[in-house]
Length: 213
Image 1 (cartoon, helix red, strand yellow):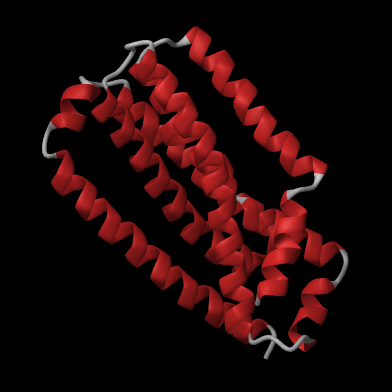
Image 2 (cartoon, rainbow, N blue to C red):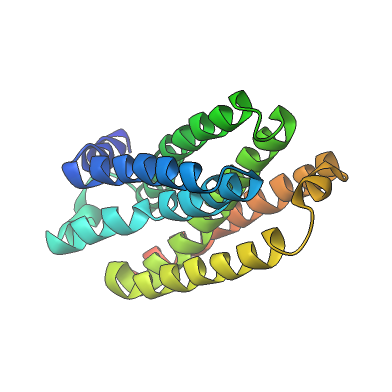
């Protein structure tokens, strides 16, 4: 399985993915200069970076389909469980690289007293959980439909995320909401997110096994 992870990490180091990371940095700077408030921070940390950072599985599967490696991979001395698990691991690595950028962006907002440290870190953790949850959804979508058709699932998720963001962050005092029972809400969010990830792995595995049985 290590070889599969190294293969995906090689994709991560390609120019397209490096450009994607740099684009996130530039976008964060631009939005930070325009929206110097909590809502601008949430736009990047809770919405933009988690949504973009959760779609690495599409890049991996698209590369495999273009080279027909997706058909040859089952002949390698690895199990189907390891193939699917490797995709989850590399998706998580890519997400955390993106969320590291988000963390720096978050701490800059704290440094300039735009938001308090506890609220900023809470938003960042929520962003991580959202990214992991989206990895779970994307994995099922891409394993079921493939790299090209699965993109429609990703676009639908991205569109829904924008709607949810606008509904939550533009209607009331977000900072007051975040301070209200945040520990309990965060614990519930963690349990729900990792339960979804656990279920997604087994659903993705079943789809993959049925597809290449």
